[in-house]
Length: 407
Image 1 (cartoon, rainbow, N blue to C red):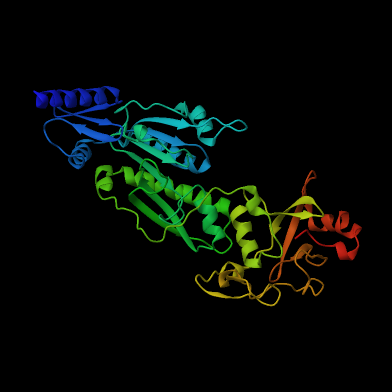
Image 2 (cartoon, rainbow, N blue to C red; image 1 turned 45 degrees about the vertical axis):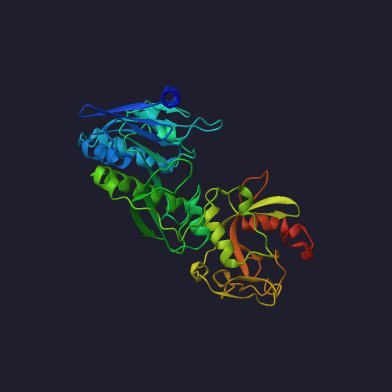
């Protein structure tokens, strides 16, 4: 009797848990399967989750009904490729609906495109009806999708990420690739996993070289186009591509956290020529390099770049020269063999010291191991001005000993 009572309580508990779950029904050859809080529940047929997934992959065929999640110009390139494929009537894309975010100051590029092209647009957060779409696509969305949304897509969700994972997991992979002097980067199409960003299985990867003078904005556009192409390729033959997906390597993991404006401030006594050029290439399109002129914020634009400053040599270290504290070490990759301090007035000066070169019309500023030059300046509250105008309007009005940025 006690045994029967225990069995009844167990069955009652299981029934209650099923009622509480938000589940979806997927019907294949008259067999029903459910997902509940990310956990597969199946009938007495005894099929495992892996078998169910393989069955889904085998039976699902294009055209694919897609829900797209994205916000910015990087995401727009993939959305436009999906939309173009849909309009081509190739049979690859069926229904295409979009989820974006609502921002206070601007309308995201993806939202603008949807409104101009008449695409169905939803605002995050959303509820995704289970089974209403075949697969989801996420590109530069910025929100972690919960398991309840991921499980609503029978084929899961693909993510287009702007790096060769596992290198540069995070919100700013392109910026960090340039900050670190990478000579190669690329695109990864991966399967999204709940709970963490950028850790899913790799479906496809494609790489591109990084030129010594490539700027972040240009590289972002290049990778956006490559990502869109890789996405369409992944959708062609999708079941096989998903089954062939491989886990990310456990070694070589680096993080690419979101970058803030403080990251672009130049600390003249600490930053080398190589470091400043890397910062300029990575940040100028988003947060221009800045410093202080006697307490007033000043942005430095149009840097004079040099190829040898982008030739990074990883994993080599050596002591700093006598200009920097001897006990401190820096990466050899950030040392500058040619300081480019051709103006004798600025050589051997303290960090932050400024000299205007009348011949080249640039501002040369001494840093940790040499000097760097800029052609344009923006003083807070004023319009952009040339280096010459900044010299005439600000530097020349102070005594020579005060011709320096705050360090």
